[in-house]
Length: 224
Image (cartoon, rainbow, N blue to C red; front, side):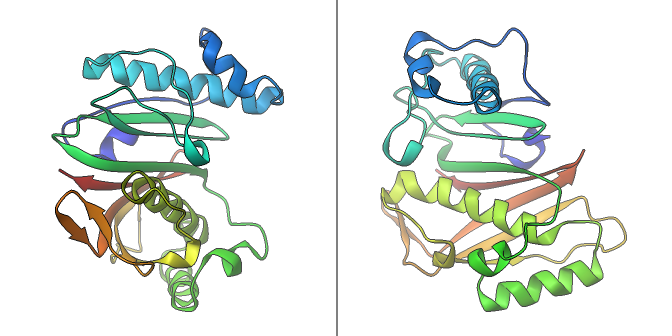
């Protein structure tokens, strides 16, 4: 799935559950030494996917530790993102010559728990979600909005090195065919201020989404 919503020049790997042969390197073991079995399984398979993607990119596939706010620490000369949720784990990596920053997020294709949409969405986003649920009810648009904001944050943080609140970006989903919406695009307007990508000042991020196999999947890419 993931390869369908990331640009050329990236390498990906994914799994629809925990892989029996997946293992952690000793340094990574320390990161989940106190984790419950479910969290440990997701983390292990996601790291395994990340190493597969790194190998395909021709980059060192060693331990992938975590830095500030839990962001994965990639080898020098690599940018990437990792995600995992019930039933899905994935990683994407690229060279900075092709991609400046990328964020991916996967969520189960289920409505958000009560009250969560109010906590993560701006007023106009809540209105848009209601309209989308009416016109294209086959997609859990509230969950998709949440996932897209997670992808925005994952692309934002490596550039700005500071937290981005949910209200720091306003998402606008492009129109879809309401009869069978499987995927599409969105724009994130950066209300918290522009992002700096080298000499560029970015006021928006572009994203893509996919809803399939019981999963909603989003990506945000800042091209080089």
